[in-house]
Image (cartoon, rainbow, N blue to C red; front, side, top):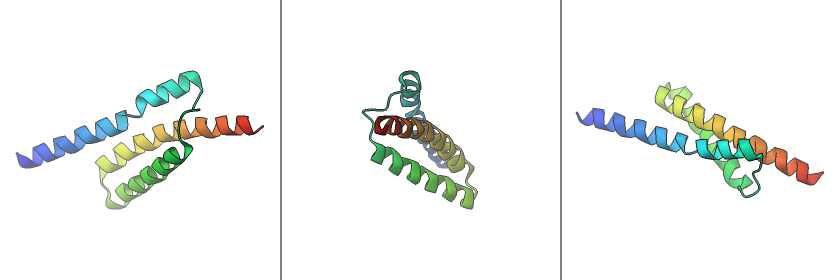
Length: 91
């Protein structure tokens, strides 16, 4: 019973932290604007999530791989638009 609760807690945490990016990705995709987003924060998040993803691969921990793979993809979309916007401003 305790293990079921622990697994459920981990699943809920993974869904919430991964899902937290969805509203920002949708807003960024629609507006094509990332002006108020911190590049440093998203770079650190992207690198940290990449490390967690690789860690999950090395440990063959599929929940870690899945949650961080999705988060990595969502963070990449935001980071792509942020870098594209910065490049446009530099020109």
